[in-house]
Every structure is written in C-alpha cells, then in structure tokens.
Amino acid sequence: MGSTGHTPPRQWRTFGLVAAVLGAVAAVGVSRAQETPAAGSVAAQGLPTTNQGPQFHEWGPGRGAPEGARQVPPPHAAAPEAPAPGTPAPGVPSPAWGGCSYNLAGTWLASGQETTPTAFLYDGTVSVTQYGPWLQAVETQGGGQTAYYGRCNGSEIRFDVYSNGEFIGYQAGNAMPGGRWGQVRISFDWATFVPQYATGTEHWRRGGPLY
Image (tube, rainbow, N blue to C red; front, side):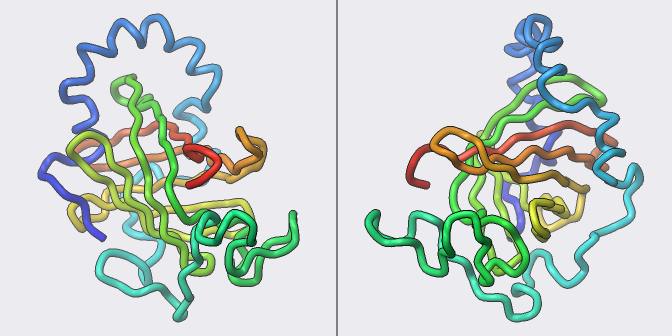
C-alpha cells in the first residue's frame, strides 16, 4: 500500500510541530535520549547508512504476500471467551505466524524521535496486517502516512519504508512482552534517505486490552 499526501514522510513530521516542540525538546531531550537508543544504534540494528534499495524485493506496494502466506487475524478477532483463530498455548508461537514469535496484527500507538538531522518528537497510530511472518503496516500522523513492508523472524522485525509507493529507507527492531496488560511492545531504529538522510527511534505499543 502506498502513502497518501505529497509531503515526504519523516520530513512532514516537522511541519507545524517544530515550534511547539522546541521547548519540549529542551526539557525532555536528555531524559528521552536516555530512554531510547541514539542514532548510533542504527548501525547496531544493521541498518544501511546508504540507500541500497529494498531488502524485500518480493514484498512491497502492489504485491501479494510472498509464498502465498495466509492472513493472521488480529488477537481480538475472536469473542472474549474464545481464543483468537490459530492461537497456540500461552507462550508458544503459532505455526500460522511462520516463525514469528508474536501475532502483531492489529492497531498500535506509535511514538518516536528523530535524532538526525533535527531532534524532535512525534506520535501516531499504526495498522498492521500480518501474513504468516510477512508484515504490512501503515502509520498515520496528522494528514500523512508512511507504509512499511517487511518480515518478522522470531522477535526481530525488519521493514522497507515507502512514501507514495517510493522506497525511502529502512526500519528494524525487536518485539518483546511486558507492556501494560502483558502486551507486546516493539522498539525500532530507522533511517530514511528522502528528502535527506535522517535517523531516529520509534516505539509501538498496543492501545488497550482490545486492539
């Protein structure tokens, strides 16, 4: 799925936001930097620092899920008293997840921080569709969207990032349990190359007991 709007992702996060955030960055920047990995963690995640094109040539805008993978229903798809379809015993990944340790389908709340070239905070919502281990996500912030196509392997998640159907960068991180209500959280590092090189961190968390 492509993105909507005409302003490149990451960059349009600054419009109408910088002025409001400058004071907050001064007050919050130090503590937030301690809370989240610095830009140097982009290298730690193995993200390319130059535009090397998509990692997943078989998966992207306008393409069906690779290997004929079947869609995984979100965790809340079943009635509260019944487990979601394909749900294994607690703590045991379902074979339907294709080697991914978690069911990541559904809605997430996102918060992040650009660290290079301009430090600022942002937030939004993310909708994830999962096909076995393959993930398609759309992140919405204000009037713009960023699209992600990638794969989950165990707890590791890697994405190619797109804007308006154009590849612009990479995002990678790890999922882990322990959020509120025992839900999974995901911490990412990202690097984009349009309109200029930029890096940052991002965190996804579930929005409530049902999602």
